[in-house]
Image (cartoon, rainbow, N blue to C red):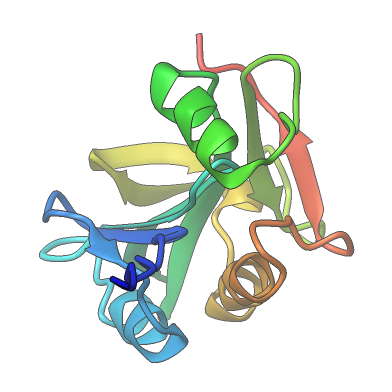
Length: 160
């Protein structure tokens, strides 16, 4: 009798800048990638939990002597997402596209900062978050199977 080898399905994908996806990254690789962000040679890290959406980190630019990051979450209903949900036996999380961004409540919407999001962009200061806030959000997302950190402030925004 022949035994079938079970193929372990990748549920995590990591994208660094525009490089190809890395399947099933470990936390050390994710954290190292985030620590290397500088807003120039490395300005985007994307962590996708198949069937549950992705968290995207931009920036790494210095502002007032500290690195800043823009963190958002995407759940876009695409053929790929629907296929992943079916393959993993996961019910849809949201009935329509959802986009959230991480907000630092200690900062203001009126003040602005410059951060790299594809190119140097001016953003409200309250969405330009510190390393500590960013890493807390990403670690929770990774450790809790694609869930947003419930004690952090996420606000919905429209892409269009």
